[in-house]
Length: 380
Ligand SMILES: Cc1ncc(C[n+]2csc(CCOP(=O)(O)OP(=O)(O)O)c2C)c(N)n1
Ligand SMILES: [Mg+2]
Image (cartoon, rainbow, N blue to C red; front, side, top):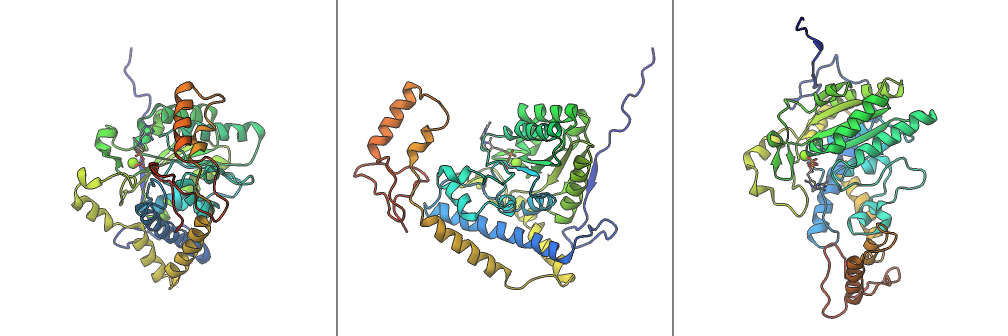
């Protein structure tokens, strides 16, 4: 019996178009119009400025725990930019920049992080799923959406986001498997930001790349420089075209870095070196893209001020809403609450009155009550 090679094509490509020294591969440069490049940069700047503002809002007790995007704007925007309104975007919990681009109003996102139920409800005509906190659980949902689209003959593509840590979850592997078997129009975008809270990539997987995991499921996988918005755009464009043409799913691994905290409840100085962060700051996706736009005379001065004004307006609108009613957390998981949760609900109801304040009026904390994390108790 011979011993033969069954799969000689085990190859993983890496794509980089604009590197951190500003070198550009003009043969690979995507043919994007000037106004598209400007829109892309604006969305990245908005993502960064909003991110910084949201961290400050959390520190001031005006919103609850928040997972910053900082450093991952190119991975998110280069990919989300390739979608049409009718395509589906399936986020995890760190896709602020992409979600705003897709049409979530800023104040609605702020409402989400302040515990308001309506902050997690997409508009009826919006093809986006809400933020998903449980790691990787959104991936089978994304494949389900793509399967439904294929079944109904709808011309839509689904793009699903997740992190390097999510690739250790069963849901990731089940989603990849079904996507391959059913050959559905889904693009998996893994933002490999090197960390899953305090777990570094080398403890997450022994694979040389995350992209190669696609090959086991019979799909193409590509690794891109995730801080190079042009490379992410080019890879995502190709994958979306393939999905739209009926040629099945793709896994894109964006190699990037989480420049900030995991969430506002985390202190990364406890587990990673300052030198590592400083090294990645040199590869900041915004600086790199800005230099490219300047060379092409496409850079708009004053953009940051414009974006800050939009954010300030949205914060004002957000803060004119009454505070969230924490009792709603008991509402939508069980048809009938189990006894222990019933007791917790009653205890909470005794501490803070359930009836929300009238719009524009703060609900005062009763004397002796303990404020809850993320609950705004006084209007500012
Ligand atoms: C199923 C599940 N397990 C654990 C957690 C706690 N948790 C939240 S984020 C996270 C790490 C996720 O890492 P990664 O997938 O790399 O995404 P990143 O946070 O780096 O964007 C963990 C373990 C969770 N939310 N859900
Ligand atoms: Mg990660």
